[in-house]
Image (cartoon, rainbow, N blue to C red; front, side, top):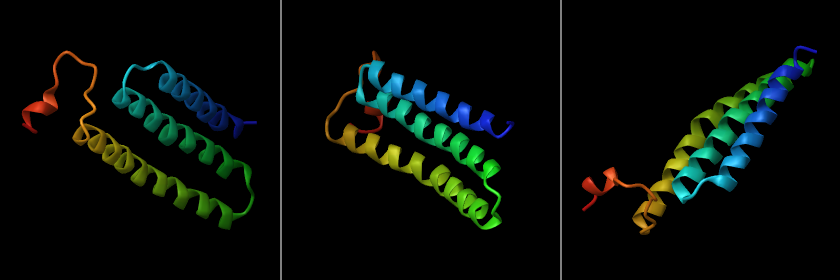
Length: 103
């Protein structure tokens, strides 16, 4: 029964992340919600799955997958945000601090 808590936590993070993707106004805040949703939600789900399975080989594969997702997902979202900014998509904020670095 205890192994269901990380699964439930992961599902809740995924739900609220999807809600943020729908509700946030621009690409950057939506990307932030999607990244948190992917990283946090999948980590909770994989942690719960690793508690459920009995095989050490499958647990090892799940932990390797968890580490891979934790490293790659923030880099990919940063690359997407940078590409959007370089492509001319402006954030809906009052002060654009990145404009100082990229004239």
